Length: 169
Image (cartoon, rainbow, N blue to C red; front, side, top):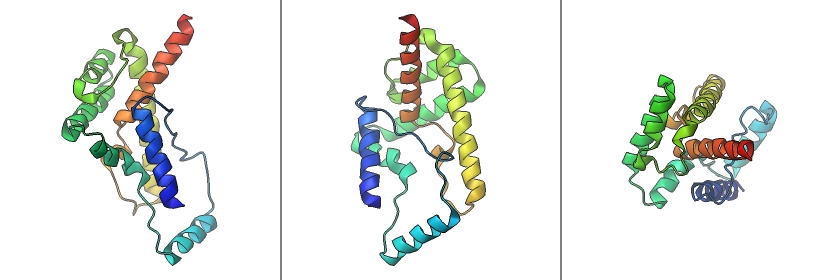
């Protein structure tokens, strides 16, 4: 079952990157399991020798399948995250327009909305990451625990574009 869920999650991310499906939302903080439920599941998984996949790593795994220059994409995404931190909407959009970021449907007149939406999304991601870190200090850390991924950035661009289209109509 864990492998099935992993495959569904990976397929969903792949389809999202192609613009064919909505992004799966992070349910951290929205779904709570008791310590007893988690321990029971851990013992069952260990009993059968099942390794839980690292769901947060799917983006990197899929990047290899998409034949993208991963280093250039990674650098472009980091630059976007840094621009978000600097708080200048024009700088954020300039970083987003880097072809290596592979973002589509950018509208430079929506710079303020993109920046504000990305800033909020990044803040939520950082807060969730730090909370997870406090709850599980042994958890494996990843650079994208606190940085927005390319898929998350594109999802927020799409959200702003849809909102703007609805407001214009």
